[in-house]
Length: 123
Image (cartoon, rainbow, N blue to C red; front, side, top):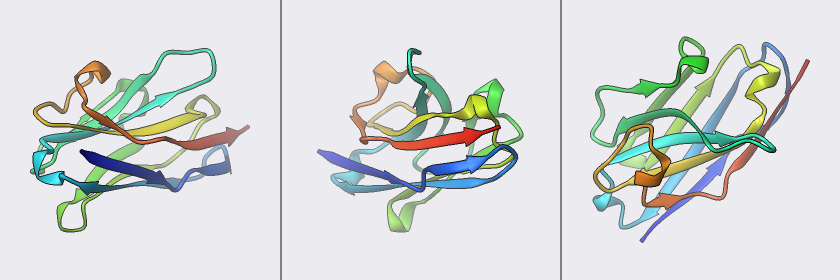
């Protein structure tokens, strides 16, 4: 099992920045890739960004390209999401996910999920 715990969410005004963190523990050696997803009230879970746990290439959703950056510190078993120029439409519950052999856009292909951290952006 891999446990994931997100932190760093909050209430901010439009244009502000936040950095989300995800602490991974347990059998982290099985992790092949990690990602961030979000879910707004009444909407489906949406892909935000992902990357291989080994580092290198990253993948981001079009609505966040140029504003959000995914990164990781493998030595600390940490995943991050730097969010800049936040907009009200970024308001959602943000989830960290880990896959044993996947790091793409499909949430169904991830094996482990955190409980989420709320991000609320006011206009």
